[in-house]
Picture 1: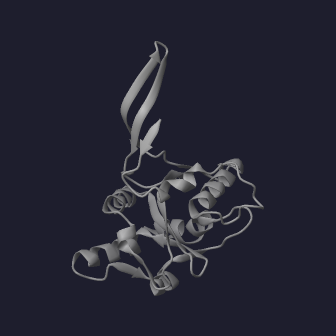
Picture 2 (picture 1 turned 180 degrees about the horizontal axis):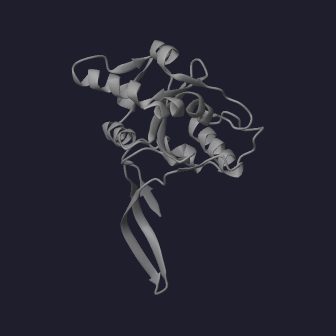
Length: 202
């Protein structure tokens, strides 16, 4: 099967790596794989049920070598319409995406698609928990970015404001996520300590 990539192939290279990875030899392999390992740990310990959404593929051509067999000859990766991860935790619907940047000063808003922002807004408006996990490679730091902070910068950018979220904002208004052995990135602790208490007050 030939799959053509209308967007940079690099985005999909990490998905080719084995999902069953050693906890000791592959720590910090990629942000996405670390989140997937974290979610697997949550599932095994019955803490939460959170999965990665499958990448949508548009099938273009199918051949039938025999009556009982079909072979996909050509297909395209489609641009995901929402975010990468969703699930449930303590009765709350959770939906989020992961982004990373090499910059030492900010993360460009261009890294976050408008349809993802609109999707997260719908989740939050419906009473769910929507957020981003941001990785600053230069500092080896992970942050839980609440949707309200993201949306504030998004609206300002539409009115001619800056087109990025500065690193200082993460230090002041986001929540650091510790990298550890098990779980890798314990973002649920952030939700326990900061997000759910705030939601229960309203």
